[in-house]
Image (cartoon, rainbow, N blue to C red; front, side):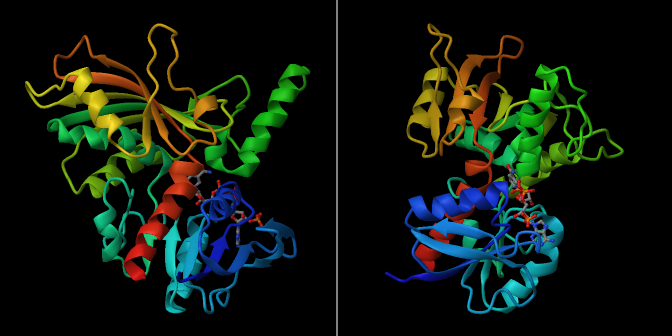
Length: 338
Ligand SMILES: NC(=O)c1ccc[n+]([C@@H]2O[C@H](COP(=O)([O-])OP(=O)(O)OC[C@H]3O[C@@H](n4cnc5c(N)ncnc54)[C@H](OP(=O)(O)O)[C@@H]3O)[C@@H](O)[C@H]2O)c1
């Protein structure tokens, strides 16, 4: 089997750390591994497959002989350094938003649009985590009928904003429990025992950046420039795994039955239905954490609209929303490159 020279950019972060775990557990065929981060982490030791690796500072020269570079170090690092990786001959799989809407960069969820991988010119973008989790539930339903619109509300975990944000939630929760003042540093407002509208810029229309990503990236992934999504994105005091309440409206007279929807999900890789009405057991972030699959439940007909269904979905945004999706892209690409 062919083996590959791999670089992980942002290897000390929330997503980078998960990438390393997945490279191990999925037995990724690695020839050499280069761990890159900022100079703050340079020299730090990381254990991988029984060997100790030193983290190196990311520079323009970091990519000599690299075949695949996984970028998870923020958009500005991707913008600056991904072109150097491509020039050195590497395939870049980018977790930031830097190239997602670039027409020459495929935006891929392997279960949905794997055929786009072949169109790359050096960079393949990983979609926004909330978009991935929503589309894992919504895209399979197109087999049952045309979708008129989707209305989604998110409940997004602190870890979606990185390792420091996760630490802020833990530390602030302890502060709150001990009656100490809550001092936000990563987030704009206290995250412990609170929730707030997603901490991204609001545009002139009133949507924030995260909501716009869900709208625009969906259209690109589904190759449907008219696909209608309205999103409300909210940050909640959950450590890990995003949740989403999703309303899917089908075209006039085209609503499938819940049985048909369950059948489609049963044969869709990457999703699991958790929908026990008797036990009141439905998707929860605590059960989605550390899980590859997106959990789907609360499946019901929308009483207010004869063409719509409602559901509640949870997915680990560091896994399927980031590292796992990126690795799956690489696995698809490797199969065609062998
Ligand atoms: N967290 C999620 O759920 C999620 C989901 C989807 C996509 N993403 C995207 O993935 C990327 C990483 O997110 P994260 O949550 O893993 O963030 P994070 O925990 O804050 O980690 C950031 C990583 O980037 C590195 N970095 C920061 N500045 C750098 C620089 N100047 N040069 C080189 N490396 C630098 C950090 O290295 P040091 O340790 O040395 O600072 C760290 O390894 C972001 O673009 C984010 O939007 C995140």
